[in-house]
Length: 374
Ligand SMILES: O=C(O)CCC(=O)C(=O)O
Ligand SMILES: [Fe+2]
Image 1 (spheres, protein in one colour):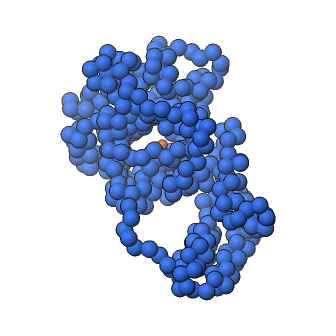
Image 2 (image 1 turned 180 degrees about the horizontal axis):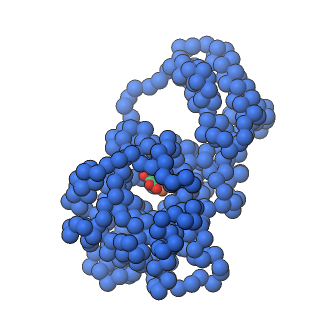
Image 3 (image 1 turned 180 degrees about the vertical axis):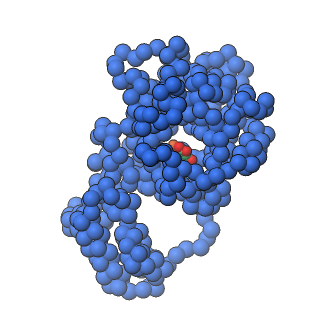
């Protein structure tokens, strides 16, 4: 959305300088870079900006050196910037950082590393991180084959990323149902929590409100899990093979930093009986004007929160172990409101329908899965 209002070099400088005071290192460096890029507008001397910029880099690197890298990666870059800045092959620090992220990306490590974290923010800012080779594997199609129902009403599906596969399905829920779901959810909203080892916790990592809907209690919603069964080929029976429907709403700046949906605390309620969260089917129920994408750093894609669509991916590998490449996060909403509905599908009840893979921990491949593999 272009509002037609543009910041001048001096504005970016002011913001960058404030950010230095507040020790927001990433922000200060990026705003000062922006100020440098605009310096020709003559609103402030280039030397002044340059001085502040060097100061920001030194402060960043000092902080970086004194910190346990996993302490709080969100306000520092994952590497010292001074040596990169001195590297002759790069025209700008911004370009160097991007290249480093891309070089370092792609390892199989299931751990949340800093690159994953930074890529989340890059994706949220609209960066295109998919290589042409990646993109050549993507496609979209009308799904008509996986269930007889779809012969009459095929569903538009799009493979948006691979490893892990991320599929968006369009027009899977209509405006009437969306309105009713949000009405019912509103009666019972509370601040979102995250699952942590000591139980549920409020956290700045997740800033939204949410409520749970038992679809079975509402005649009008009973059809919803059945539709998900048709679309995914999985069993989606509430309480047996899936959880209740979680509705969450975000307003300005609301976000959910990268996380795994699969549960890592083995004695978490319900996990033993139902198995872990095997797959996520997430509806977009209301579309913000700007922001609010869902970023998948490993697949290098951010899905757009298009109302009425849903995003689907597997959180576990074939053998039931957690797929550490499924880190994802809700990007901050910049303007407007966003509502989503999460249906988490559990592992154990799927065994009857699902063919085992040939390797012990194979990745699920969604387009072949939806074409009848499972
Ligand atoms: O809102 C989104 O885009 C993602 C939400 C999410 O990942 C979650 O609730 O687990
Ligand atoms: Fe999630």
